[in-house]
Image 1 (cartoon, rainbow, N blue to C red):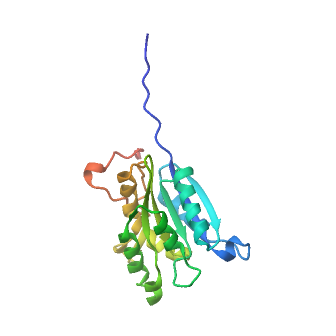
Image 2 (image 1 turned 180 degrees about the vertical axis):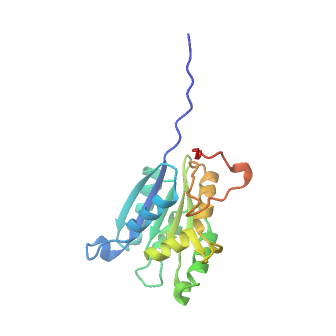
Image 3 (image 1 turned 180 degrees about the horizontal axis):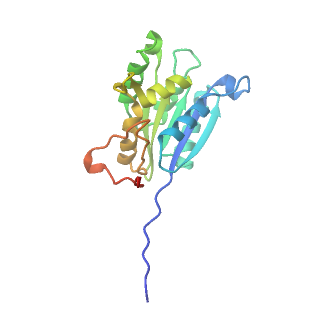
Length: 212
């Protein structure tokens, strides 16, 4: 009897996008957070992925419920939120994020504020956080991002001068390796947008080769 062996299918990368806004979720104006995130991800990630979008109000209970559902039910490996991270009384996204996390990842928020401070002094008022949410069989990285599309792009991919030299590193460079470490799929990126940094021992050959 002949036995045919096949490689196991690669795990699908699942990314949750959460826009937190009372007015956008209520139909007062069009949400810009999720489209901005979708556009950036399409330009940056070359690994096949699936997006799980959610547009919700600034309600802590709803934010927590949405984050738990995205990780525990939808199986997201990465969840990006936008909105609700300022000092206003209705801004509760960081509190909800910390409540569902099992490990805090403070470096992401610290770097986001360092990037934004190059543009506006009020960036110090931003309270973005990042956490790992873990269960017995799954884990995900959850990150709060700024609310404006321009700021989202700057914090994710960093800043370069006119000659292309890096002025401030974007936070996304560390995301693929973080996903590796918590057991998620191997994520590849477009180096023209963001270079995924991994130690040499964790790097794999590129999935596609340039034959030109």
